[in-house]
Image 1 (cartoon, helix red, strand yellow):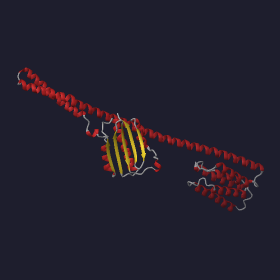
Image 2 (cartoon, one colour):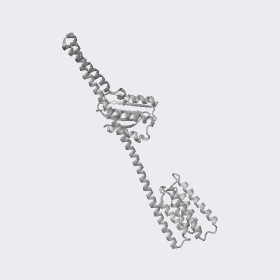
Image 3 (tube, one colour):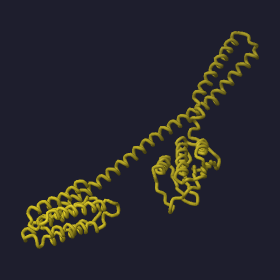
Image 4 (cartoon, helix red, strand yellow):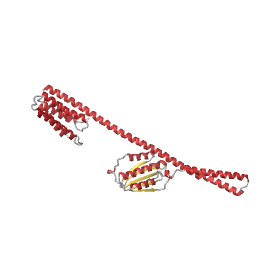
Length: 377
């Protein structure tokens, strides 16, 4: 669009200049005429370069100088040159200027240049042509603005679509981790039940059979049957122990979402003092709650180190009777005015907490803090 406007600007002046030298009898010195035409094109080029700079697009002085130069040139040589004043209006639509005011000034300049050069009929035709050009340019500018708004809306929709896709992937990952951790907890519970209940009963039966064998002295076919039962119980206990070992999750998997492990890793790699403190009588955490606390703590500590440039971060987990409260505070920079612009990280923390039935609080006090509050299950 910019190249088309520039071409139209220069072409309008060049065509008017060539036509005027052929039809006007006021051109007595063709070399001077051509030199002035080139100077006029240079003035137009300087205006284009000047107005391309940000902050100077609406500055009126370049437009006024170019319009005056075009009008003076048209007044001096006549012909079609007064119509060349319209070239001053051919500027890219995205330039933020008052088009109607400039069109009015350019129209006045064109009429001033043509007043003594055109007949009444020709002047009327020139004004009608000028009005048509102004209406066409206004339509083009409006179309360009609408197109720009549509493109901006499209870009915004693309951005929102990417954010939604990222949120969807995060939600799927979150659901997968919750399911995995829930399965680990259930396997752990089954392993403990087998070991504590069935295993102890089998051991008690085996001990009773051993006592019966010792008391009877090992005589008779009944004792042979008792020995066989004892041996079968011993085999069953070995199989039970093997099953419990396979069911029981590895300590690494069980501690994957441990806050203590997270704090240890961050403290060892960040170079900052990252501390963890538990308050109150601890109780087992629901799998989804463990993941929410782990992810929120990870995000909050990372933000404190990266954006707040904190050197000291404290993670406090409070086991209240009715709810869990995890507060991540730091000594880093507090947002100006106490207002925090929520990015994807903080929005993700809010969404995770909300899905778990809790809420997120941002505390911009002496120490900036983010608090995750979850109901006790």
